[in-house]
Length: 265
Image (cartoon, rainbow, N blue to C red; front, side, top):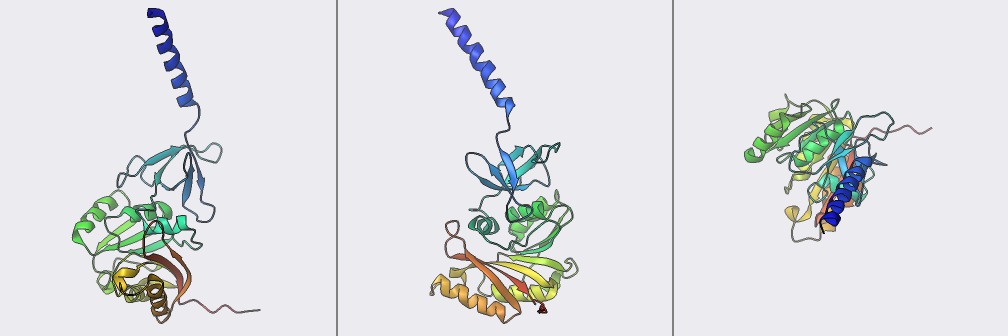
């Protein structure tokens, strides 16, 4: 009885160790449409971003170590990006065509909360980009400021997005605004920030929560009314996508601010 037990232990350990070290568990590939965003291929595909601060998780998210796709590249660390916790991730997974949050961009993020999505935007824009993150709540703002200490490309601003002049000295001209402020006047808030900070031909992405604007109307009617408000403020919508199944009664609208008239040949 003693000998069979000994063999069993030896075989199990040897095979387990050999297999574990042989191949990487996952392969991470660049997203086919959106630069700066990645997809990890495993049992289930997972949206992720390249961790700007390797070894550190921001909100308990899974970190993924994977070999670089290029030959001779270093092993890199990515952070899983859950579309159930991020409107921007939900829009990407939902198939949006124009995600203007990209490497090297200057992004004004309105409604930053404690920085869950902001941290992924920080990963995407990378060391050459900047995220100006505005949050009204002081409690969430403290978490945002603390997170930003490890990420030099984030400028945390604890202030009211309804009053952009209050933080005009902190924010430069931006390539893109992403807005996640669930307020009845959110189209107006977007417009006044665009006038102050967004370049002509700059892009905006706004998450609209229909019940926060008018709970008596169908979501589609609310979205259509908000689009008309944007058009009146020189915000020209280009694309709209609902966020089901990740968020109910939500849509993300993407568009261009003060689009220049292109000359036709």
